[in-house]
Length: 124
Image 1: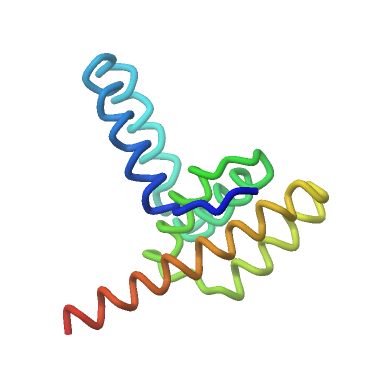
Image 2: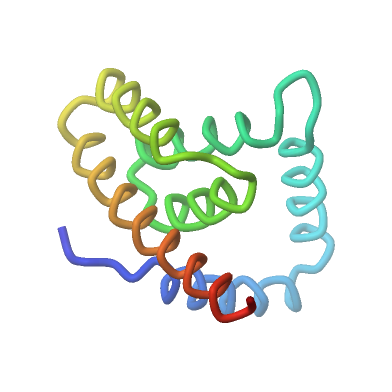
């Protein structure tokens, strides 16, 4: 598996999605509304919804999903321990291929957590 810089990947995909938003504004607005409503706090917290979304991204082998949902999970106060427990479930349900993407998710977490710590230190 190639080494992925999830920050770059998210940036590249976001740029392409911006083009799609311009070309298909109604459809993309509908998708954004669905995402916002689905991920809002409710009977299941937003953090737990991000854990679920990340698990789906891992088992569906979606590197971009890993990047987006790890970033959101960090912002919502998720912990590495929660991530690790999630990864064991992904591996249990998805086998070896999920284990490979679990490793990618750990690398993404470490990178994005370090970036956030650097940003917080710089702002202080």
